[in-house]
Length: 198
Image (tube, rainbow, N blue to C red):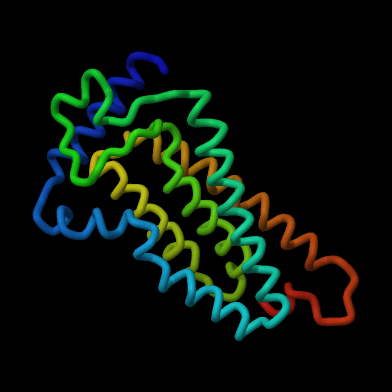
């Protein structure tokens, strides 16, 4: 990574991790960045899609899960071992001032798999439901963006980790949405899914 970009990344990390520190963020950010705490939302999406769209809803859920799974695997098992960037708590410079609000972990930092996974899901849902719900892009990006921001605030990722993870995740979500669109256009006796979501 170019030295100027590295320094900017460290300065942004310090700003978010230190300068934005407040009791409210200290309370909610560790909660928001934990994927387990979003299980009720995942269950709601599954239940809603199956209830509202039946077989088509099952296709949506399968592709949503595949987009998150593909993003997770490639991010954590391929990119991270290749880049081998240390987390803030292990960075020789940042570790001296890092405020670790949760256990830092032993894995590598780039990219943020949390950001990758959630932006993959967010963009897949945006592409699928954008014609049905005009504002879904706002809520989906706000959801994934908050989780990504929390990763920096609690001290386990640098801003560039979550930014690049978000970009890659968005690309993966878009790719799987193309699969969904392709399935829509396939000849079928049932009404095309596009008619349901338009």
